[in-house]
Image (cartoon, rainbow, N blue to C red; front, side):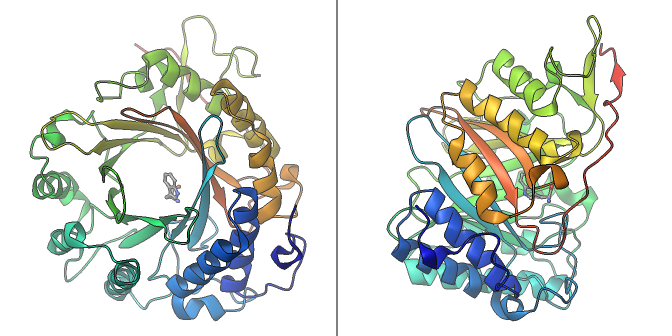
Length: 385
Ligand code: TRP
């Protein structure tokens, strides 16, 4: 039951960026089974991390662009689902949003993460060791630092930091990733990564993690399902078929979908590229301990009703009750799902050694804008191989 303090997504009183996103967070906490005390303190943490832009009225345009979301909101939510458990709620934030320039954006990001570390008493050593690589004097885009909080019961979140391997130029990205992995104790990890068109993010777990990960995100333009099935380099983990099936369902390419892939043909996703993520925990191992497939579902559906239906199919396949996902969409927006696209930004399948697979849905805030539904043509169909 939603407590009156959480309001509902139809309430229009939240007219600032901070008020709007904090309201969404409070209602999502209710869906994720967090109590009011935790919800209130996490909403405050979000507002604090945004800093002065939290006060900015939403009827003013976005103060700066951000790559974090399509509509320039510096906040995105995600729900990660395991069988027989409440979903884990996370929030992704750009603390430097609204800064005059990337240099300042990065400095603010580092300051906010260090303040969080002091508050919850964990070390930023792993981040500090990489500062020269990711925070050069003349940083390049499209981001400097994002942080994600996993909102656990008890009021102390787990923290992840996302950095830009192209901070010193796209042509330096591979070198930067390799050097960062080496400094983090994984000198051979880079060699185990699959072929890449680029490395959009490097991510670090900070704080109270059982096995903190270093994660490398890899971009795969024009990827086909059969190729996706071959991208995991983890030695335990998803079968080729599991990954292929997730890909097909998320992209709308199932046999019963209205896209006819034809006999022996495989469809490439030629709009926003698929990403994979490879995580490293054990310095003794030269291969990753985890693998995630991220499908940017919003570019392959007409509207969010379709995206939700695909997500529900995937959740049921992994033994998860899909009802909380529908409730979480109502917690962030009062619009009809058919009236826009992009509320569900990505659907992901994550495998981490020794754990059951997880399905994650990334949920946009849409504080500034809703993308209108698309008149989508079928993805380009061509035979692969
Ligand atoms: N907005 C960017 C994108 O769509 C970055 C991003 C935000 C992202 N949330 C994500 C990437 C979740 C992968 C998964 O690529």
